[in-house]
Length: 414
Image (cartoon, rainbow, N blue to C red):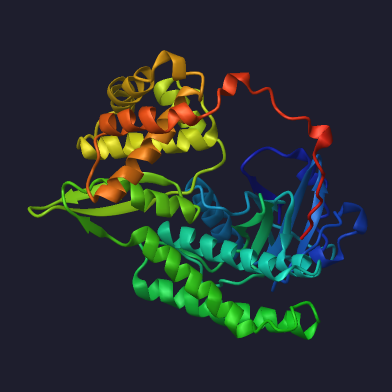
């Protein structure tokens, strides 16, 4: 049999690996010293040129299927490891055929859950770990992916600004559908409940779980968190025609849960409107890049997120969601953003940069609408903001900063 290597990109160094040797017997000189999770298959981290790759030895058909599944998940922008290639046609030195190998790129700065728990995680840090897994499962289900083997072992975790981001590692049992039924989602949750409780019991037996932590309660908390997220993201909401400020309220709640709204779907009826918000979590810098492309505004990431939310709400309110995005963005810039920023008196423009002023006007409008119980026109909110809020702001152009040498340095470790 001849060696057959399928890869997404040419990598001559792959030819130098000892494919004629069973993976568990590969010499140490080829291996990278990285923590491995528990797996039903033999897995090794290997050095290939400047890269570190994860190699898993499995049956030929399963390797092909998982490679294709991971490629599909990456196209959907789902957090998962990057598929690198599949190796078929392996033959041992004794002439006997060997299983295929699935190759994925090592996810830098990621750790399996056992490595994290070996660091004696604090209770609140462990909770964030479980939240990350619940979030990953929600994202997978929103894309129509049924995992079939939900567990901590099949997940990698990477620190993310005080929290954790979870990534799918093992997709060999997964199925991709146009949409999951409630039964399919609940089946995945049942699998998660059993697997995670078992893994935590194993940690407890090894002395790595906090003394008072109940594996079954922790496992159940992941399911509870999942249901909270799922309902917040997929539940519909009705409101009267004059209460469109509730759209902003719904977006705000989703942002607080860590989701950014990529699309607003609004179906109207005689008595009002039914809102269904479809979220999509986007990568860092997405908002500022998208806003710059659409409007030419170069602002901070959080400012861009807020402005884009208003742009999306404008498209929905004017029933223009199906139109060219750049045309709608130009109209929003001309008829909404610029009139607000230009209406600020010249003597007050140095208090905050224009994008921050616009953001604060939107916030002020939301609070005014909440108090009044109905939509407040943006020009009315602007007048009230300029009269009561902006004059009290310091002149930012005159603030040079603080002496950091006089500030205490506090080290905080999980």
